[in-house]
Image (cartoon, rainbow, N blue to C red; front, side, top):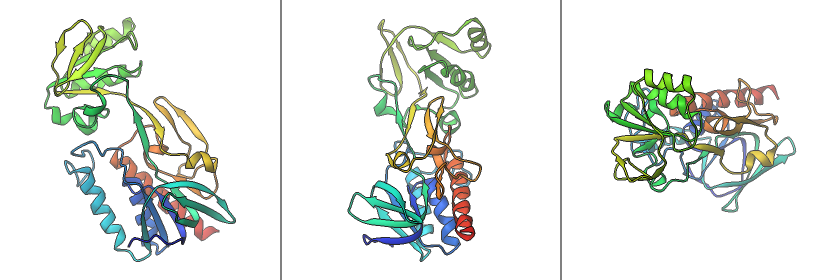
Length: 300
């Protein structure tokens, strides 16, 4: 069911992707009144297929979300707002959330499943291939490269770990691109994994994933991996005063084991609240956040 009217609910879930859907489902099954606010911008919307999530391996990401939404909307206490939450603040014993479309929602609890934005190295040809032939997660996309030619585009010294992992999925070339220089021990480790180290600067990416070097050489690849920097989507967490942690690839929301943030009554789950993301992680985090939010209502 979709509504534009002001809602008064037990829990507002901000973000209707994997983590948000999972959180909301636990609350719906507890017969709680829920509002879900979703702008429709999944992090993996650029990928044609999702992998590593049991029972859904190889399915289109959008189809997984659509099926989850259909499951959720079968519960009569659920309201769906296809909108963007632009403001959130404490309001009495709960919270008030303002939507871009003009509606307002008052909720006793909030679940932030807002996701993150990927910020890629500024390289010509990289962004338009993101999720198609340029990836960040070997477990999500490595198998489909079929032991082929794989590149790792360095973004920092953390790319050493990427390059050490990926030989299990193919023949690997590490493009250091002046972003870091492996020391002797790191070079020995890479050589032990049969990784080719290419120190020349990278000019651009063309074709499927061909790396064009500044010296004019072209290295054809079947796929390219790089580590993006991430930023929590939107400003709601900042408006509410949620504490963040500095992760190796970007800040994320600090939560405890129940997915409670530093702000009482506010929970966070999914990629915005962990250093590493996947559908399976997001679904598990969402379940925990939904259960914890429900139990906090009982204790109130």
